[in-house]
Image 1 (cartoon, rainbow, N blue to C red):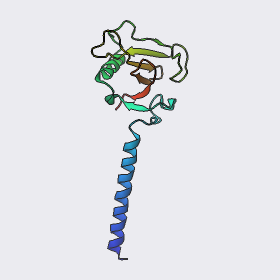
Image 2: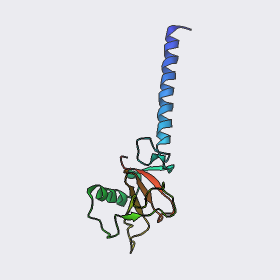
Image 3: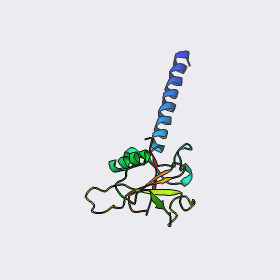
Length: 137
């Protein structure tokens, strides 16, 4: 085999490896356990980018970052994690915040739950299930 053919095969192999790595990385970024640098990554919950949640979740997150003011007097209350769907921590570890539901007459079922180590969780069904939120995405 000539040197041109070897170089061509090597370049094709390199391109295939790069594309395969890119596809694997992209496929794993959807709803897999989070990277080690994401607070709450060890929860075992699927990870969802903040940008993939309803826009009201982003607005609520911005309020949490600023420290309020919040639309509900119950925002910032202790989330007790009674069903233990989040990692078990001290009783006052988590705080819950309303994610408004358009058209709802009450607070609705959507919440962001924020942990003391900056973990951020989202539930759309009033604590029946959660996802770990990556606020950087």
